[in-house]
Image (cartoon, rainbow, N blue to C red; front, side, top):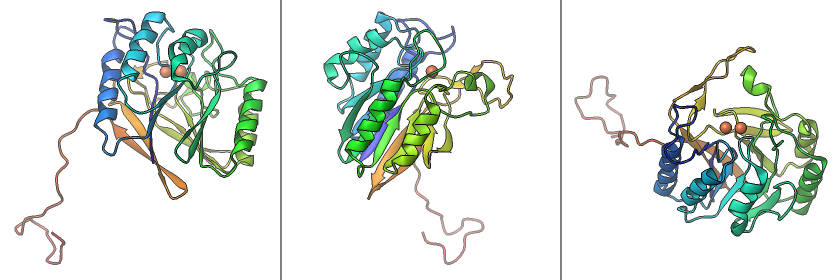
Length: 278
Ligand SMILES: [Fe+2]
Ligand SMILES: [Fe+2]
């Protein structure tokens, strides 16, 4: 069982660059190609928010066209750059979103349960979980206490040290989220996006993991007064693999790299040990 996670696509209207620099539409297309190249193929794909840059209808049209190229189920949640109703309209046909209220849902991917939470505060950069979202999470976790479970939401509930992103993290509901996760040891990951970097912290006794962006990354600047900057580091995706009852997570580069090359040492290799396995 393999579950891929991509995040923060920030799709723009055709021909436009994000912030005048980042070719997010092209980079998202590269991410789709990388997902299609994976062997073994993932059983489903999670998209942890900021699918669009400005929540425009023309951006949703482009992102839904891109995601529809994936043959496996795709489950998405909104980020602060999305807008709830266009998001709901765009993905309604996939059948997993509620018809009204916050975009919370629970689905199964084989033995793995995915509980998705809507942390969007419309018009704001930071996130919050409404009381009804926390009640939904409590009910959803009580329904399947034995199933290995991934909880996903866009805004991370912890400080990363990157000041300008910490001021836009999850605030209302973060403590209650941690309490619910701690009470439910079947939760093996809390998966987020938003910070455009691979970052982890223990949270409620489990691993809370922020996915890198498939587009531009947030600059690694661990000052409280760090300016809000991005950097065109190589984009990545996450692969969560269930083995037995445990999940192990890999970070994979989206761009192709030279190789793979076999670990073969010729006999005359300087420093080769005589007992080396060929
Ligand atoms: Fe983002
Ligand atoms: Fe975000």
